[in-house]
Image (cartoon, rainbow, N blue to C red; front, side):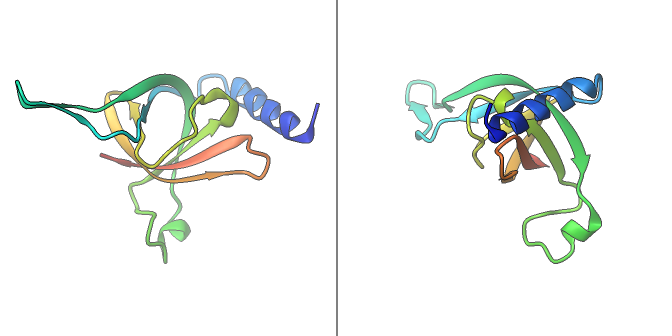
Length: 123
């Protein structure tokens, strides 16, 4: 097993050990295609695929907000094991937690690619 694979497995093991702390949510992966417009009824349809994923929500820290052009006080960090999320996260994707949509504003990962650290903001 490579070191990268070991770190990825460790992230999954850690999430499993957290029992009821991770939150189940819907990860909505949007396509890069333009929305489809139906001239008959004027509706616009976005193309997307939904995935169920477990994540841990944490609040942003004041020191992260200060001096940042990206992070705002009410933002959250969504921590997701990389191997449990099929698509690679994109800024156009949405995370839905308890029927509330959160827009992705920033995406980070650790050097081993074991954990996604996704900055989200209520949409």
